[in-house]
Image 1: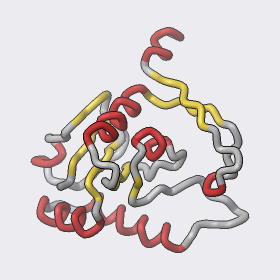
Image 2 (image 1 turned 60 degrees about the horizontal axis):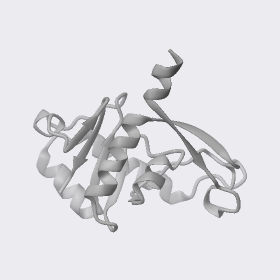
Image 3 (image 1 turned 90 degrees about the vertical axis):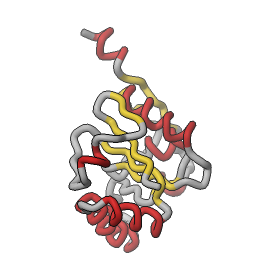
Length: 151
């Protein structure tokens, strides 16, 4: 069992000392599913440096951001009681939740272009209201993780 578990996951060590934006995380070991790493690697190797990515779980540990080397539209880190969330988090979170509920391909494309959101990473446990014609055609899929190129 242990070998099987290790073959499906990777350990990613994140060094965050003296990094202001995520200073609440000291040296941390994060267990990251290999299929997630593979999906993010696909985004990194098939995207432009200026492309914007959105993770369906808002990348709370910055794993997608770090491994893709791409900016995300919204990352929703763990709550820091000392500083709280910046107001833009609430606005963008509502926008991203709205994107998940869209049901027409035209609306998704318009929203994605307006926000500059080129890539969407759908985690296995998340659902979208998007049309099946789009949901059934990710540009990459690995172990339930699906990558969509929105425009």
